[in-house]
Amino acid sequence: MLSVGRLRSRVMILAIAILAVMSTGTWFALSHAQAKQQVNGADPVRIHFSAALAADSPMPTVSPHIAGRWQRPDASTIEFLPEQGFAQHARVTVRIPGGDAGMKSVAGRTLAKRTAVRFRVGHWSTTRLDQLLAQLGYLPLTWSPAAGPVNPAPGDAAGQRSAAFSPPAGIFTWHHGYPRELRTFWQQGQQQSLVLKGAVMAFPTATRMRAPPRKARRR
Image: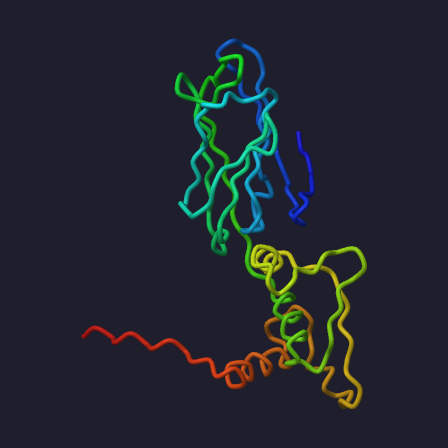
């Protein structure tokens, strides 16, 4: 059973329901991020149960281990809020405990066995890099968010991390005065775009950023 939902923080959750038989023989439905590939690494990991959880129910574990916390939006739902998100291409496993020491409902029922859900985080979007460089004035274009999608504020760290994986929709517009030939070197969302490469090369010079020192090679 597939379900799709949107959190208030612009987070899209693709979920797959996993049905696990409880020790009593009744059904206990769980849902969890399922996109399998290209998952937004900044999204919360949400698990929904078909019954209210006991206050002392153990929590699932997430690997690789990252800073974050579990919370309960409602009596039958828990979600893991990553502090800074998972790294690009990370292979994530969520293990939901079962058996006598497993997840427990208010009625005292537990999952019959442990359940593991796996997915892989996607990569940062080149389109988002285009958007940010345009907003900062490093491209010969402007970018404006489309009506509807929420563009995270500069100080919204969580929103910016989410947008790095899943950028908001918007429109690029060329500034006046640039030759038409320059447009042939612009490819939105493509790393091979020469206009983007020039902007990336200019950014550290303008901001006086320095590359980290190289480690000495071992002989």
